[in-house]
Length: 297
Image 1 (cartoon, rainbow, N blue to C red):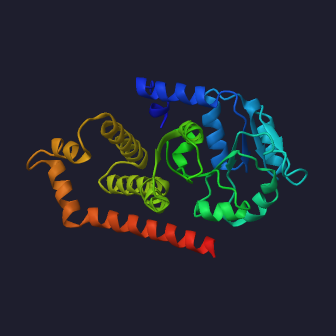
Image 2: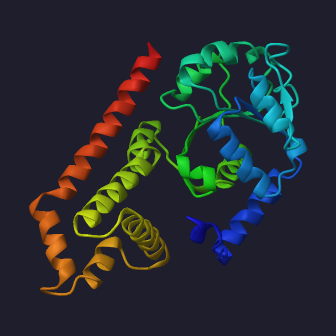
Image 3: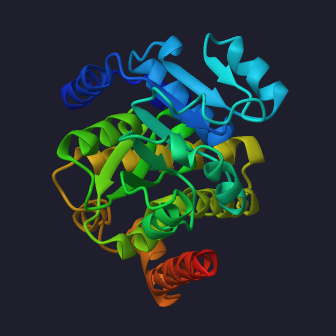
């Protein structure tokens, strides 16, 4: 992981980072909830040049508030004043659990006035959020993933029809501070985003775990196996991102006829690994849809 963190950014990444700094300059950003994902996004924003004094966090936990206070952030106890975090904010990030969202947002909904709302709560559609907020519609729904914690996240975004071009750029800048972002035109596609990125870090960890087990069965110790498996996953992803070739073409280029790689690929193909991965993603998307349906009742 450290090799990735220490990698010098290419020109495209530098341009993106600068654009985010410019777009967020002087914007006041409030987080409703100060948990792990909120802190990951905050870390990315500060890394992009957003002043800690421009970030406020509303959280009922005194421990979390104290932790964030020590980093120069403004913190608010919502049990004392639920509206203080939103009154003069430009951007409000909803980062609380879906199960408590209704109670949390109802306490400040009447104080909203043209602010951009970004929700990172899984399963809550923009329609559901709008109803919770008393009909407010300046909402962007985001599906980040856990690598956002090291500013290597991948986030899918969807906005309501009432989101302006300026607000769309602001939402992009906020989420881009912690990694890559893409927009989808149909909110139903957010279930596919969940399957291919939101839940997918766990797939990668499972593959690494399986490779480590396989390598130790072949005689390597666990530390050796873990180091090789993780670096190989990292390197392959970097190659795929940097190359003009498709993943299929990259695989073909490293698969010598009758060689060791071909033997491994043929074993995977005979076990129908591609179909199994597809079925796992379908199960993920279906569960995402089911959770959304449950929340809408």
